[in-house]
Length: 406
Image (tube, rainbow, N blue to C red; front, side):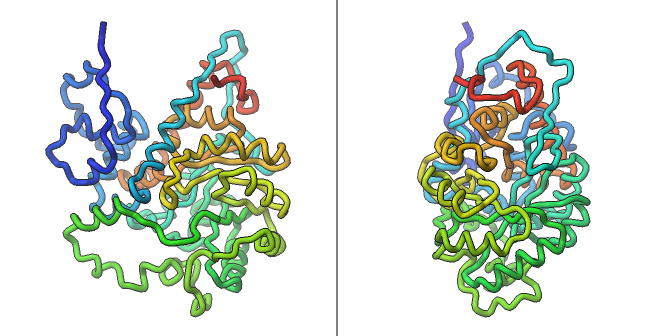
């Protein structure tokens, strides 16, 4: 009988620069199991094009090799011990899929509808700041990938490219993530500019109220032998001083990227200012879900910011279990955090998510191969989702339900 060798290698060990650590174990950054047979196979040839990647995690290794330590540390970091980062993905393994056999799957489709718009897949590209740190294509490259794969795009307030450039590259309506700052006048200007550029939904992020203890990023920066001041000035580290969306906006009164008074009254005020859809990103409890619903928002995104802001050790997918019932079907609920497989997407949908966002995987793909890398990440996840839908006997996204999980 074959035995299974289980390896639990933390992301921190990999980021610590253990160059002599076996390549096989470096791959297990998400505490994945490794079979004994795979430990004795010959090393695979290097991946030289996006279409050679077998799964999404291949791109994490490629990104680590392609990027300077500090830049990889920026996208890899969580806070404190990075446990919430790891938990986000590990938690999916607690949910098992019930495969059904007697179904007509001849017309299987991953298509879905969100706010009246047709999506080819429930997967969307979530907001990631400063993408030029990973590849010269930056957000425009991601937008082109979204266009070629007919995938919804959410643009970060901290994007390296302007909303106008991204909207032109996307060629279709996009969503604008919002860091409103602590100056209401600035928040209004950002919303107005995004809507003028073609944004149909504003996504207020509410999980960034204070400083973050980014230990992994700090350690990565220490082993980076470049002179950071060649690219970064003290001011350029402040989002409102560097991001194009803030150009021509008076930011002289801004002291923080997020206000400390996001109350129900704040949500209601923002609801009145936003012409299109208003979503709230970062809701993880039933109480906050009800507050947002009562404020008139159009959708929620269950997210812990990929473990980058909080070290609660609670996975996004677990938070979905209380947020979805709290809104009683009145508004759609989306999820991001820890998605690495098509089966993860399926499980999130089965637990009530209307769509699933990916953050780090698209950044890994971009770092490795630019636009082509982002396209490959989307393709892999959609192919895996199609495979598990077929096995579970769900010909449509709408057919996926809680009954398909144990």
